[in-house]
Structure formats: structure tokens, C-alpha cells
Image 1 (tube, rainbow, N blue to C red):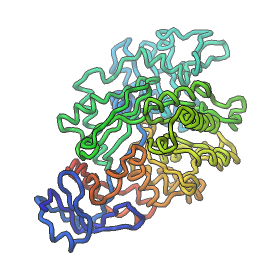
Image 2: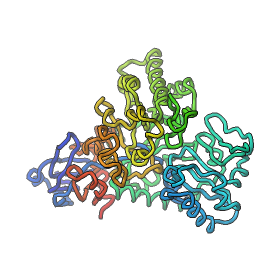
Image 3: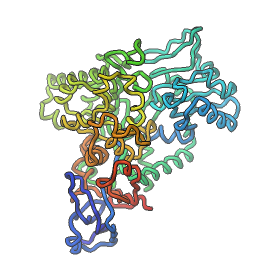
Image 4: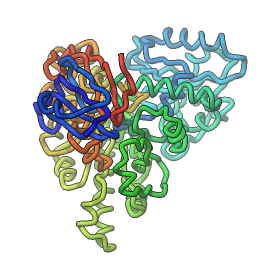
Amino acid sequence: MNLDTLLTNGKIYTMEAEGKIIESIGIKDGIIQFAGTNEQAKQYQSDKIIDLNGRTVIPGMADSHMHMYAYCQNQALVDLQEARSMSDMIDKMKEKAKRTPTGNWIKGVNFDQSKFKENRFPTRKDLDEISTEHPIVIRRCCLHAIVANSMALQIAGIEKGFDGGRGGIVEFDEEGEPNGILREQSTRIFDEIIPDPLSDDKEKRRIMRDVFSDMSSKGVTTIHTYAAKIWRYEEDVALYRSFEQEGTLPVRVTVCLDEIFEKEVLTQEEKNNPYRMVQYGAYKLFTDGSLGSRSAALKEPYSDDKNNCGFVVCTQEELNKKVLEGYEKGLQLAIHAIGDAALDMTATSIENCLKVTRERGMSQEEQEKRLPFRIIHVQMINKELLERMKKLPLVLDIQPIFLCTDLHWIEDRLGPERIKGAYCWKTLKDQGFIQTGGSDCPVESFDPMKGIYAAVSRMDMDGIPKGGFQPEEKLSVYEAVSIFTKNVHVATGQQDKLGTLEVGKFADLVVLDRDPFESDIEDLLKVKVLKTFVAGRLKFMI
């Protein structure tokens, strides 16, 4: 057989099993045709031979939960991620105000009040210091809270006694006036009136191409991107397919929607096509908010907010109905659940769905052939929930990089007892759960090596705390790489085509400048991608 590409003389981790290493890989028509030793590779002819010079190769990396379009929108907004005080935030926003015509909206993203020296939420009064001649909003990094200035509140009609609606919170000051802080469903008030920063198609496509290129440079070959209409985070399969058709899409894209849609039916030929880059994914549902904004639903009050248990965005009956409706439409369900009360609701809805569909005639065999339910985040568990979840067909979409931020305040939120059930990746792994690695970008960076570092170290990016936060819950490097490679494709039922470097699988792989399996924990952040291949085609190289 004459190959298209032959990579030889490498240290190639196939990820089939821990420590499984080969030296050479041969690729033909986007598929791995040979995987073995350098000596065995000599029997093959190839149009292109790449000498890896001993470099490390792993499967292409993936992000199982992100918001691609939202991240692209943010490129046109004010990024407040590095703001460390109220004055930092105000100064960054003032710079934007100087360049913005009077009366035009100004939007900031990614602020985190827990990183401000004041350690408090901004209010409309703080944002009024930026400008009273521009409507201004800033969104918290978790996406679940917005702060607006006085002009923005006035335009939106938010005044004394305003009802934030079901599933939403509008906060008021001592005089009963809105203080500018809105949480959860009420934030959509602004999302519905602020123009899309990517409304210019040419600029939108330029930004998206830049982001795709950045992904390739970080070894990302697959993303699962989620719509969130609550924040006007739209996702359009046709848009991604237009990039695919013009040959400029270097990343496989699975698009997950938060409204019922018609299930995509693929032929066997389409499933076997390594160059097929875009597909529909799961039907997304929400149950609660976030720990960072104290809106995740807890069974007992927050330890640092004794009158607050967070809240759920729907009733148990409503969630049961939505899960059942999606499942009977043939769709995979992906459910956002962070707090223990939300996870309880989610488990109940899945249990109900399986029970009702069995009563309506679906066999156990038919249920077992379905894609697993996906639970997103799973930041709190307890023994009772763990035992219930073990009986369900689940994949858990986790974001290890969350802990790099949250470890500085999470025990204050949950207290010394509940914290034992938070971010329990090793426990979940040992109990047999398949976990997939994501970032929730733009909440955190989509760089998978940062996620791998977080899972292995349980420290922040500055190496704090030494030894790691609850170190008994650390994953090994192999386990961490697995959640960002092969495990992600279990979620979409594509583990027979993607995720490991075996004969017959699609040739998605990355070449690294060092071996992460033999690196010190701190050096995981120094790992650089030298080459990225998707279906055997070179998409990035240094």
C-alpha cells in the first residue's frame, strides 16, 4: 500500500491503554492504516515521510463543553479577565468608552469579583463612573450574572419594583432601586436588546478563522459547542458547514442546541468519512446557575450566605417533561447541573425518563443502544447521589480548569463537610464514570494542556496550593489526557473512529515538544504543540 503520510521515529502514545507506545504511524485517505515499529514501517511506501526525531505524539485533543460563538463575540468586547480591582475594571472600560460614540452600547466580559481586592460585585454606581452617556453592561466570567449602569437599566425599563421573572433575580438597594445586578434568566433582558458584536459577516468570519487557528495551535481537533439562547449565544450548523465547504475548518465541530431539533440521521458512509467535520450533538437543558455567583442550587444554604440556597430554573415536573420529550425525539440529553440539589433533580429526571419509556414499550436493549445522558459540570456529589448515578447510562462533562479559580473560595461557599464532595474526579473515575474534559470557554481557556495540568495538579496556574487542593482527588497524567482525548468521543458514540491512534481510526493527532507523561507537574504548562493533524491533514505546525 502506498501511504499518503508516514510518521516515523516517534514516541507515539496510542492511548489504547496506559503506557502503550509505538514508533510509527501510516495514514491513507485520512485513516490510520499502519501503527507499529520503525522496522515494520520500512515495508510501506509513502508520498510524505515525517521523521519525528523522537518527539511525543498523542491523539488530537478535544473540548467537550464550550461556547464557540460566545467566545468569538467576546473578541469584539472588553475582556476583564485580568482586572484585579474595581479601578482596574473601570479603567479598562473607560478606554473603550473613549473610542465609542455617545449612546452606543459598551459590553465587558469575564469579570470575577472574587479576584478583585474589594471582593464584591460591582453595582450600577461603579459602572456609572465609566460613563453616564453610554449604556454599559458587564458579564461575570461564569456567564450567570450581569451588572448594568443606570443608562442601561433605564433603556431596559428596569426600575423600582421590577419583576425579574421566573428563574431570574434583579437585585435592589436599600432604597428599593435596582442596584444593577441581574442573575440567571433576568440577564436575557439585555441580551435581547444589545446588538450582536458579530453582526458584520466579514468580521465574524475573520474572528472565527483566527479562533480556529488558535485552537489548532493548541492541539484541539474536536470541540462540542453549545448554544445558550438565554444569553443569545447562538450556534448555527450551517455557518460551520460553510467553513467546512470552503476547506478552512481545521477542527471537528459538534453543535449542541438548547431547543428541540430534528435528529440528524447519518448514513454509514457519512459515519465512516474522516473528512466529515460538522455534526449535530446533544439537546441542552439547564437546572441551576453557578457556584461563583451563588446561584447553583444547594440542598442546604451557602456557608457564606446563610439565607441563600441558590435556585433551580425549572420545576422537577418541567425538567421531567423536557428530558422525556427530547429522549423520545431520539435526541441525546445534556443537562447542566452544578449544585447537589440540581444534580438530584437531574438524576430524578433521567430515572423518570428511562422508567416511562420502558412503560411505553422501549426495551432495555433499545435503551442500551442509545447515546448516554450527559451531565455537565457535576461540581458536587454525595454518597446517595453517587449510588443513584451509578445505575444510569451517563457521561460526565467536567471542567478541571474551574478548580484553578474556584479553589480560592470554594470552601467558604460550601463549608468543611460539603467540600469533601466537590470536584471529586478521582472518586468518580474509580466508581466507573466516564468523564470528559472541557473548559466552558469563554468561562475559562480552551487550552487542553491547562485542563490536563489542573486535573493532575489541582493547583492554580501559580502552583497554589503546594501539593494540590484535596490531593486525593488528583488524576494521573494518563487519566487526565484520556478525558481530553478518547473519553470525549464516547459521549458522541464515536469511540470506534476517534480518540486513540489505532488502525482503522481517523488520523487526528498532535506532535508535542516534550513528553507530558514524563514531565514534572509544573512542566505540563510548558508543553507546546509542534504539529496538529486532522484526518491526516496538517492543520498547524511551528
